Image 1 (tube, each protein chain N blue to C red):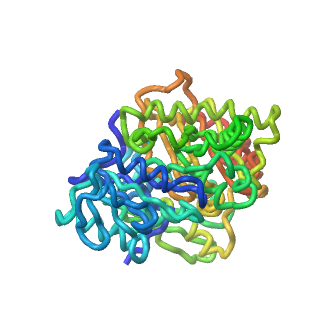
Image 2: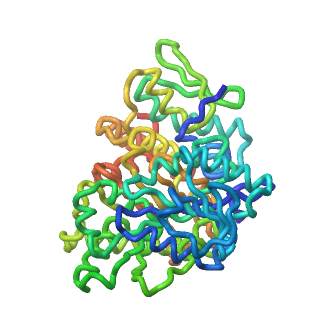
Image 3: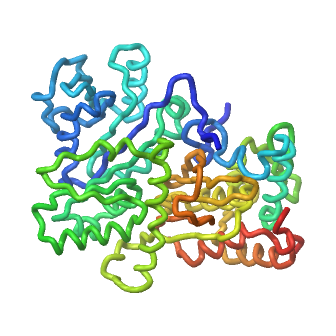
Length: 109
Length: 351
């Protein structure tokens, strides 16, 4: 049975609030998930994690092979923290610096 | 563009949370509202009938917890916890045991932080399809408001999450005191409309009715948020006396170029996962790549509404502007993080 994550809660639907909007809305659902996973991996790489589109959902895998199924985009971070035992904080200066360096390098840094 | 909110066969009941610190005048406001025929399709959920003195509004007692009032609205008490009260009321509505109602006004206790109430409504699978959050109305009294904001964190949080701030008892305080409380509220929550009210005036039902779910009122509502930009400048250029609210701050995130929705969603999800309890309110108008109309995103703490669209930019200026009201977060750090995560990598501007 799914546990409802508060972060996934939206007013009116069971989807995540990010679903079905932006450039990805024009793609097929699996192509949209692949695109989202690619964007997420720019950040997740910092934690040694990789998100992959899989069977209408995502899998999140760590360097040691430990993995978790993620049903919704909003649940990535709770799973990432559980798998790594680290907090994933976008206000952590080290994470911000890594993202800034990546931007300067054109997304390949 | 079509509204992004999906509609079920039965429209969800809009829930208005009416909050305010002890003695702020919530009950007095509610009493005046209950007499208004404009609220005839509403239910009011309160703690006890005795507190509000409904006798002279009463037509019929439906049962121990529910009464029908002259205005046409029904008034109910919360027996046990809030979730049970909401489920019970919803079942009675579905079964026709109470008159159909499209709006529910929920009065909180004076010490309540409204955010967990929002969480109850949104996170519970049995409730979330039947109710949606409308305007949060917070009453602050002009006489004791400043003292309460200084002494009670609940009072600050109640004002921070509000969509409408009612400044009550304005006839009992001198003009200078009223002005000061009003300026403090405007600095604390620049997105909320502030309405002065004394005992001689009947509040307008648009306090509750004009909200982001109403396509007709949406543009005006968002235009109100955008005024926040000027309020934030006051923080930087003077009037330090009005910005003392512990560590609660309102600040703006802006981007002149259209955002990548996936990057924005990733960043905000990550921020709210870690800092959801510190982000008291977020209200934004976004320019999204690949979307030809402005997108409205708003939420309370870690709960985000399903985005909706506007037909046009309310002030004619395209570009993302997001007002964040947060406790204990450094605005400069949040801005830097937003930019680092959301701006596309160099050379990837048009992907």
